[in-house]
Length: 309
Image (cartoon, rainbow, N blue to C red):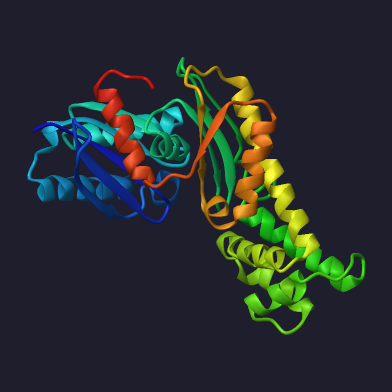
């Protein structure tokens, strides 16, 4: 029996999803990191070999039966990295179609079961990505926490910490963000924010504090409300920018809302959808219930059938 494989390759772990050529689930399993920049070529090749051979063993089907494989990871769609990954897969015995995509494209397919539409990812970072009827792609945002990632968990939390410090100084009115953030971090004085932000916390630790901003908002804090409203508007601007540059046949246009900000902060999701719709775009917003490895497998399945969307 022939089958397809989708792989979501992250910097700390990977996930493989195998389905038959009718789209039926066969097996799903996880593995180690598949980031060329983080771990190097030899480590990625060894991990791919272990992951694929384990999938073949678990399913009882040889790699030669794989009709198509799609692997996606941040930055993997660049031509140089794509060629390296394709070469690795061919060396392992893959004879079918190989697609190397970015992680956003997999998230889009996971949410809309196809390739035409727009996805906005708002997790630790943020970006918008779209693919239209002609296969053209467009993206906005995703420039990293120092110069971009507007509307992300990191952006929300960092703005909240800044607002808390301005409140402590007396430059802004009192806000619930100050005591709530101090309690969440486990510090006794506002001056300790300096050590936490600049010496202890990584991006993910800071981004996790976005939930505290939501809690302050739900308690009626106006500064928290302003920060979350601004985040939703920034994400909507990303979506509108991508929607405006592409041409879609599907109506309504799938708008996949992926990431923890959308799934955990209702006010951001609701205002985001409202603002995008107010821009005159005929969208249908969806929160994905499938993972990115499933999305990659769907892309592989469509490629095996000669489809582009």
